[in-house]
Image (tube, rainbow, N blue to C red):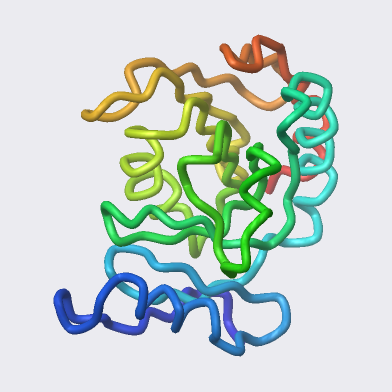
Amino acid sequence: MIERPRPIEVTEGERAFEDVLRTVEEMNTPDGHKAELIRGKIVVSAWSRLRYFIPMESLREQLTEHVAADQVATHAPFLFSFPSVGRAYGPDLYVVDRSAFLTEERHGDGEALSLVAEFTSTSTRDADWREKLQVHGQLVPVYLVVDMQEDEITCFSDPSPQGYRAHRTVSFGTPLPVPAPFSCEIDTTAFKAAAG
């Protein structure tokens, strides 16, 4: 299968959000692929490339030192839903309340996320920089876009109904300040080796 995402059109109003979300959750995607609900469409795309693992794990390890006791930093493959905008994403890496996993549902509540990090690829870059930025910018305290094509990382913070009010971009190899609730500095040295 090629890396390009494959959208499946979902006509607005045709099915309730929960029905569409259930379809996404129950899809038998090929190994190495995930299904998300983006722009009202079910999109199947490849998980991150192997070379992304080192920077992804470096980021997870650094964040783990700064998460609250009732939270976890992980890159486990789970969907998080945003019912008010009819979206469901499987973040590359995220920090979430542990209570989000105490459910029989197959997806977590997007409101339990305190940080989302997306590692861009040619197939997902547009969604990471546009749609996900817009949706997360109204709710998630910190959104990191690790732009693997441009060799830089951007930290968005201070969400509002109009989107994030603050952001900062640094090149790989430069420390990145991450504001509250983490209040830490991310060492991006490991990101340079994986850059494309």
